[in-house]
Image (cartoon, rainbow, N blue to C red; front, side, top):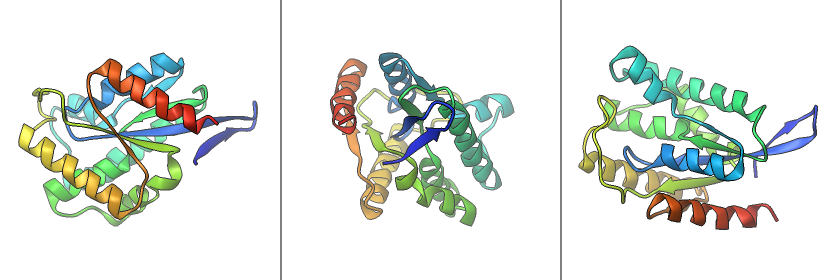
Length: 185
């Protein structure tokens, strides 16, 4: 398991990756889990990028997206308490890069490949919520399903332990709380 050691207080922060395709409830789950555990969550930087730039990122901006996400994780881990819920990781950036641009930069692949060591646990949000358009960032229910299937394939290929989270938000929080109770032992 990955943990962040804070020398000043000698406490450990476990990073939990929350992955999933567009419109699958990652952000809502991350926020709800942070509230449940009275800690922090790291919003998806891609959403902010799209809002500020009023466009989706290009192929040569994918590494920037992933690095910024990781920097924000590191910043948040300094103030998190026990858990840090990360709304996406470089692995999702890699998957979307392959989907939209048919390739991912070498540096992005390196960041993404370190996934298993960086996170204590990986949650995958099922695409069982009704799909909702979100401006420029979301494409379609078909793309959501395709990305979900690709994500599961990559996690299996790389032997990254993960848990599929389904149902409404309350059910999802309960599923995660049950799983994390075992990580705390």
